[in-house]
Length: 144
Ligand SMILES: O=C1C[C@@](O)(C(=O)O)C[C@@H](O)[C@@H]1O
Image 1 (cartoon, rainbow, N blue to C red):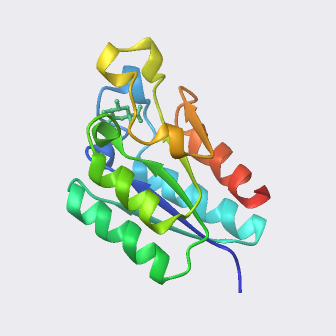
Image 2: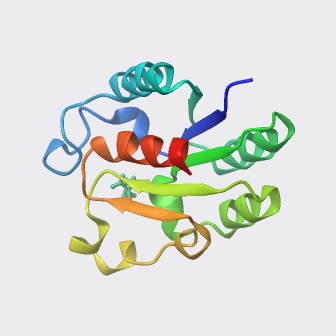
């Protein structure tokens, strides 16, 4: 069976493409998801994308990933990156390797965005490459 990869997006990422375009660009989340699905087919892996604005739903989705034998997670937890012990615990609990993605370069932004509850557990972090960061993460995940 093809390697299963979950791409998980957190709060406000459903607004990609219209939200603060000077920071996040003009590509929509639907376009990102489509690009990743196409790339996944090229690379011979199964890519599933999900988005939620709700912390508990993201926790549930991470727990479900373990039951579904997902082998790798690419996560942009949005603002929950900087606040959520629950997401950290969920990722640690399922022990699925993951890459943390940020569309913007969080280190060029407000100091509260410099701390992540996820980074020290991540295989790696991609920040500031725009939506290309998801594609870079997917290519890495497949090679991992
Ligand atoms: O919602 C987001 C998006 C973000 O994760 C990014 O992709 O650059 C950066 C976060 O600080 C912010 O809260």
